[in-house]
Length: 345
Image (tube, rainbow, N blue to C red):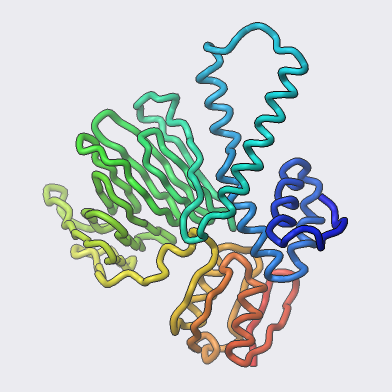
């Protein structure tokens, strides 16, 4: 990827080329970062391209398929021309897939990447999925359920013949559960559980004993995290309806200290990286933006933190968010070192 004749390419096309250049040669990362730093629009276009292309091909799934199909493969060596033809076909498919995914409505999650589950075996050895800070990925489990894993998250998956057990060690995830009445799908966080047969819901666990669950479709049963009760007593269950959210404050109590309320309209927009806020407090916005970057965005005073704003923001780009909030609220942005942006008057 070079800067030759950039005017001949749209911003999205340039972003796709930069993403592919970095994937082919990691040494191009500094040059790609410089391109992204030109404007918030460059960074946003790069993020969208990277997310889309990431969900077209996944090395882990490719390696799994190679292992699964190795015994079926033709042992005869392929000719050089055959190898070139296969490589060309794969390249064409990748480009076609990138074009297709990037052309979709941003509110629709990208096509999930198939991931193996213990080579198809049902045992107690968990599959572990993690994301780095700033990374969001889609995972397809062996049963067909799809997980969207948020930044800085860790998920453990165990598939059994009579149940499907998932543990959210930390972070946030949305689960689109494949219907299987014979195998309940349960997500556990700090001992609290969310159980479904076939539905779509989200679970968040950022701190000890703090669990948030939101239901998008279907019906789920939720038990509180860190619940103190007699061993013989069964856990108290809460049943959510679509559009509802239940939050646990982090205080271990018999009741679970739960709050059930309507879920925010923008709840799952973190999956696309662009989130719409309606009369939201600045401190709430900053807390979410800071999940995605080592560059921290902070308010200089409680007064600024309490200000409210309506805006559509690229939550994975702190520089873009800082500039937008500053314009909307009449503030200035101070750079304190390379990893701290301060909103001040």
